[in-house]
Image 1: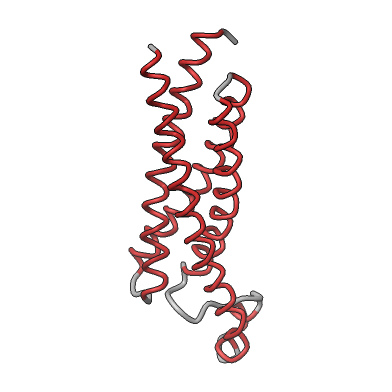
Image 2: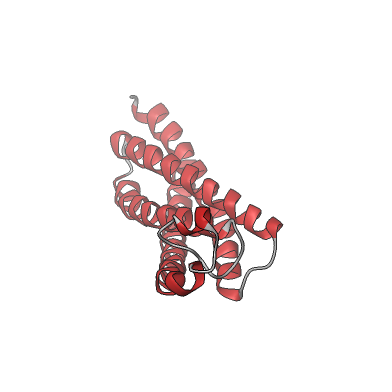
Length: 167
């Protein structure tokens, strides 16, 4: 039984470190895309019809799903890096209250990451994007898998520690 707890602790720790790096990449690329969209909005959106001109940011690259994808990717990156950093602290402690906090924040991060992954899949389905957006799509899909495994490892540790030490 002690081996299962140690395996889930080391898996959750390693996956949290990987997630920090992947979420950082998401934040960098999505921030660049937002900045690029803000800089290019004035000249690009001036030729559009009135419903498209109302929005403050128009993304000149990608397709019509790009704006939602970039904003939700930035949101999932910021929340994901925050929950991964606090999750690392909670995983190191490895007791019942800290693991419950890590499990709750991990599920929150997972849900936002899956939302961004769904938008990445829609972005791929709709059509052509440039290389920076394709990189953001791929990293979002990869981080959704690693966040899912990390959430599973934390929940396995919660079950093991709760059974061992009691709630």
